[in-house]
Image (tube, rainbow, N blue to C red; front, side):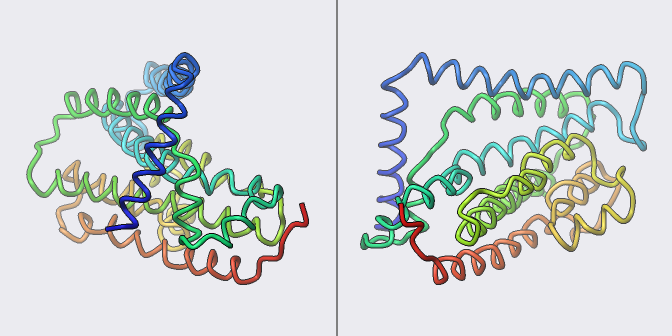
Length: 261
């Protein structure tokens, strides 16, 4: 309970700092909205020419993409400190974190809270609302739970990827840009149901980095293309991906030597 209160205190400090520059905050939030809106336009214009993609309609694709976008925005809002962790290592700021009595994960999490991602989340909510209205999904308690599990599992998976990115910085000092393929790239791939990319890619995104568990399979359940409750619970299984990410982080902390800054 004390840890939660301390984290909320970190969050309140970050928000108060942002609110000192309200115009900057507003413009940044609008910018996040517009970036996502450009992606939406790409989907919109494609469906002006094609009626479906591998059997998925425009509204179903929007439903799919909006969930992935919301998952990514939530993870980026909360775990932004790990996404910018390389700067902490290079500047020697992480040395200060290690000598403080609080847990290092809590301190890195609390170092940044990107409230500006609310612009991206708003775009996701707009697309999701449209997708719900137009896709004719018959909502039930189980489907609402599936959607909630997707948001939880997706946020955990993207947060785990930020942890992996940060852990690798212990050994390289610089952030590895190829990791963007698995974070920003996954958000872009998530525009469409992952099954359209072929069986080999689907297998990779099921058993290596479990994007399909938080997007494709539960989406099939929501759209009534699968009826097994197994598909409903897969997003929660994806949370297990956080375990190796956390272990890699712990290994990185134990191996860490000061950058000398």
